[in-house]
Length: 551
Image (cartoon, rainbow, N blue to C red):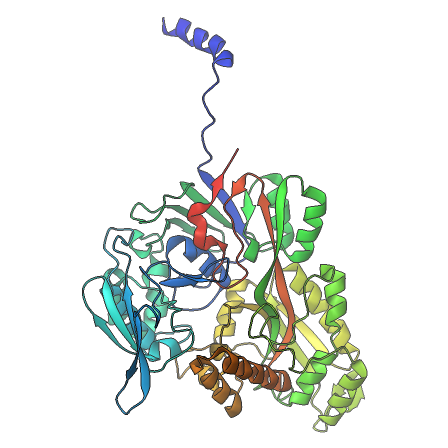
C-alpha cells in the first residue's frame, strides 16, 4: 500500500505545487578581515564592529540619516528633555549628569538581564590602567555611576561636551567576565571570554549570537532567543573571511556567498567594474563615507621627524592621478581627516598639490641633499629608506603602495613595502610596532572629535597598557588645547572655528599623510532587501534584523 501511495504522490506532485517556496533562512556573507580580538572594548577594527553590531547594541548610535538614536537605552538624553543636566563639581568646575535607562527587556543570550551591574563592571575595566582598552580617556571622564535600580542609572561626567548624548558605551557581561578580570586585570585582554569562549551565549544581547568561530576563516551566527527587538528574518548568518578582494568577487559571482559586506568588501574600482558587467543581477550603491584612507607617520623615526620631510612626501604623491586611474575620479582626495561631507569641514586649511620640484627643495632643506645611486642621504650618511606597512589582500592598497614606491623614488626616497594579514597589522599598530609608515583607514562619526588619534595624552605605550590611538606619537600643545576646547564648545559657530583651527594645525604638521575619502561599493543581490549603507562608524549591520530575502 505504501508503495502505491508513493507512486500516486509522485504523479500528482507536478499538478499540486501551489504551496509558496520556503523562505531563505540562511545568509552567507563575506568580508576581507578577521579581527585581532572579539572583546568590544579592546582594540579597534572595523571588522569587529561590523560583526558585533549583529550580536550587541550600544546605548546610542548614528542612523543612516546621521541622526542619533537609542538602541540599548529607552530615550536619548538631552538637556531639553531633562535626562542631561549641568552640575557644579567639587572645586567649582562644571560637569554633566546623564540619566540612562536600559531597555527593560534586554537580556544576555543566557537569559541574565542586562543591568547596571554590567555598566559598573565595564567602567571598572575601562578605568583600570592595565586593561588595554582602545581609549581610556572616555572612561576617565566618568566620575561616578549612581544606580537607581537594576535598569536605571546616572553617569556623572567631569565636563560638558557638545556630543554628550552620544553614549557609545559597549557593555561587558559582569556575570561572565568579571571573575576573569578580577583574577588578573593585566591579563584580561588575553583571557577574556570573548576570545577564549566566543560562543558563550551570555556574551551577546543583540539579534544574533555566536555559535561557531573558526579563527581567521569563518563565524556562524544564529538568532539570539533573548533578543527584545523584531525577530530577524534569517535564522542563521554565516560570515566567511576572504582576505583577497579579487577572490571576494569570484565567490560572489559563483554563488558561494550571497553578499559581501559593503564596508569591508569590494573596493571601489571593483564595484564600478562589477556594476557595468553584472548590474542586472545586483543593486550597486556607491556610498560616500566618513572613511579616511591615510598613512600614519612614526614621528619617533629620525628620518621622518622634520615636518618638511612629511610635507615633501605628500607633495611627491599625485593623488588626483591615482583617483582618476583607480576610481574614475569618484574617490575624492583627502586634505585632512575631516570629510567635506561633515558639517565641520574647513576649506581654509592648507591643501597640498602634486609638486615634485617643491618636494625635492624641501628634502634638500631638511638635510637630505646628497644623492647616491638615486637615493637621498643626509650629512651623517643616513640613507632615506623607509618601510610602509599595510594590510595584505587589499588590491587597492597594493596598487597605491606601488605607486608611492615609484613616485617617491623620483624624488630620491626609497620605499620598502611590507604587507601583513589584517589581524597582525592591527596588533602591531596598537603597539606602535611599525618602523616608518602605516597605511590603513579610520572610520568616524559625524562631527567626530579626533582626540584619540591626535591628542598627546592618547599615545599608546607599555606604561599606559597600550591604550590610545595616537599611533604616530604626535605631540603639539596647541593641538591639545584646541581639541580640549572644541569638544567643550556647545555653540556650533564657535565650534566650527575650533574645528577649522584643528584642521589648520594638522595640515601644517602632517603627523598623518591624507590620501582619500573612501566611497564604499555595496553590491547587493536584488533579492536581498533591508541593507542600508550609512557612510559612518555605525555601519549597515546595526540594522541586520531588517535584512530579508525576497524571491
